[in-house]
Image (cartoon, rainbow, N blue to C red):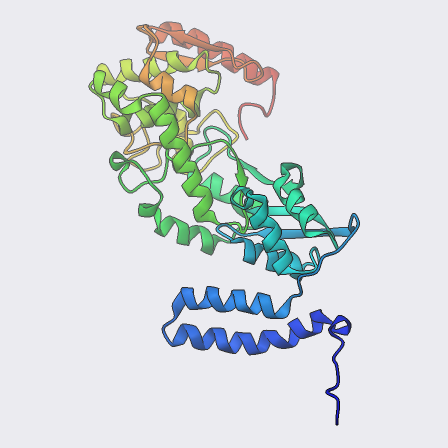
Length: 374
């Protein structure tokens, strides 16, 4: 009587089995989706694939080397386990999934780039993913008063985002969560702050976070209601805030600058704000304008057009928004920053007083060549 040959399962190289099985399962997965099974069929077959291709085995010890893994937004524990397996962090997707499920902490796993070790026990790998210290964050900072183009340039330079990705995000601005009164413009609503950037990096996701933060600030400052008390449109208030931000960054002076803007509007005066001209000509790093700059045709040029520009000229911070909502109680019609090092700004009720202050600014510029114009 012939004996059936026994098979030594312990000698199987499961990585090779997994490698060759992937092709088979890829075909099955594609067929299931085309056949109408959709995502449900995919997930079920993928689980079966995990069961078939990975043993319920585990590494021991404290791991070796370094492995960086990126957990995408919305990834489930099986997908996370697969990512860890591919990176050589865990020995078994099934083992990781079981450990994560039994821990009761699988819902605490978050997206991002993690610095781990290779050949870790599943329990250790899970603990490292749950530890924020192992999360390698990517940050980007948008200073207060930067306009949309300047913010986009930062995303391209610092994050390597393509202009094509940015343009695609802008085309989807209706999905960003802008307030109903914002209109179609992003300027003013991409709140300036320091943001943690999730991977894979997306211009749309960054802008969506900025708009969400703007909405929080608008709620915290009670922007719409306070604008209404002053019988002002919230977009006009935001436009004033952007001019305030473009003129002075010191919160102590911002309510005074806001008052000057409102006082000039009330008297029917031209605003003549250099910050609006800087926006038109695309000039940054300068506090002055040339005669040629001031002749540039644009509805945003407050040297040529009375009243406020059609919308914000940059993305103002919270202090500038508050200043536009609560301007100082003053009759001042003029101001000039006379010291760019300290930010000292002087205000005047009459043009004669203002001329004296301008002379102080000119004296500063002569004593500090290159600081006033760039």
